[in-house]
Image 1 (spheres, one colour):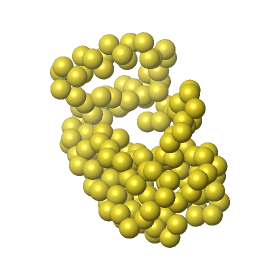
Image 2: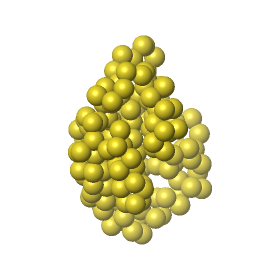
Image 3: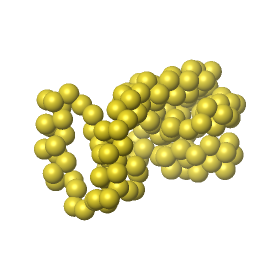
Image 4: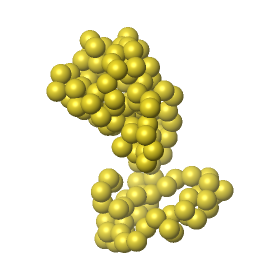
Length: 147
């Protein structure tokens, strides 16, 4: 859950061991009651996390298919609910300016990828979230296809 410092990882034992090695250095404090509640929920309803992968894969595939008629180049993605899109066929603006323009003119919010980089970022890439209602994804894709 974004911002709550609570979460979980479902992975094969070998990968889980590596995640735990990194995790010990990333966490300084957590919302203990929420973490315990999440653990109880996962034990009580294991189908929830077992179905998440297919749920988000379907969302991703729906959004990517809807954007296939746009001028955006969609990069392959897995294990996330974000996709990266190259907008260089649409604009010469840098990614921050393009995201601002996109919000103001198309009504679609995106994150400029450069905000995740310390060094200058020359690529024209934006991040779009597909963890949305289908109607929201369809409306966003329709607007993006008009660019």
